[in-house]
Figure 1 (cartoon, rainbow, N blue to C red):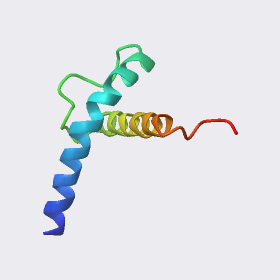
Figure 2 (cartoon, one colour; figure 1 turned 180 degrees about the vertical axis):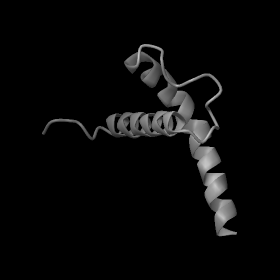
Figure 3 (cartoon, rainbow, N blue to C red; figure 1 turned 45 degrees about the vertical axis):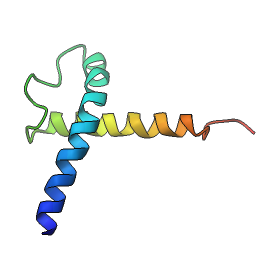
Figure 4 (tube, rainbow, N blue to C red; figure 1 turned 135 degrees about the vertical axis):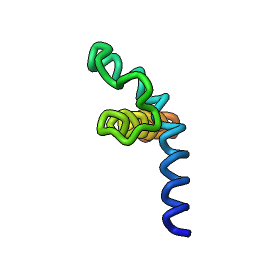
Length: 71
């Protein structure tokens, strides 16, 4: 049951974070990465793209909650 939960969580996180990270990674690598068809592939570039998307979502949420406001 735990393995199934882990796999489901990974699919959900990748489905949400990869599309967010995709334009950022494309911009930073000048279109070289991520390769076409790597959305659900188990490759380092897909994992990096997902991580960048997660970081972008966390930063956006922090900005929305005014965590960067100066005192």
